Image (cartoon, rainbow, N blue to C red; front, side):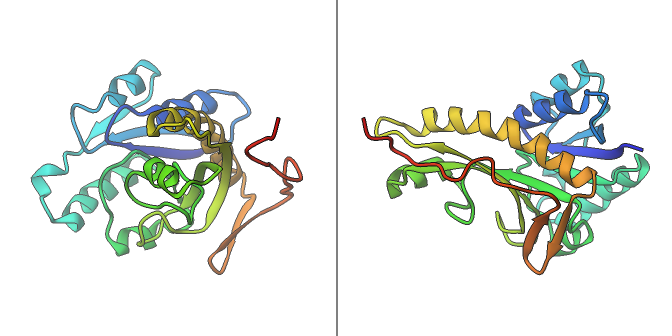
Length: 217
């Protein structure tokens, strides 16, 4: 049986689209059963509908600072659709500690940096100001702390001296679209376990021995 997944979005749904595309493969161990947005004008809603995925809008603005009230409505929708796993795809709403704890080990997020470096806002700008030579993206389990949680998968890209936040973002987005479906596949097939604060993957191995940047010519 395929695991039933909900994707939570607030905007264009770029990673959502990558997950939906991957899940369309017959051998993918999860199905995208529902896309929920906290904004009625999120562009990702139309993309989800065009892919034949059920969509739902739960406006967060009327709840104001009542995060628990919003989450009660959200949880009811997740229960109604039999959701087993959650993927956050640019969902711009903070959760209470109670909600994240109830979904611990079953809710994934993706962040465009090599966590724990550069959490929070403007990760690309942070990376460029720090002068790092490698950046990338991280899929991690969601915990009450922002952009923390056990790391499931990471992908790296070299940072050029000529990069801007926009050009770096574009390259990292390609990595995001590769590792998010791969991480969901691992979780849905039960190959991921959490030991303390660290995520371990059954049968995992590094793809290469090392990655160096920049390359001297």
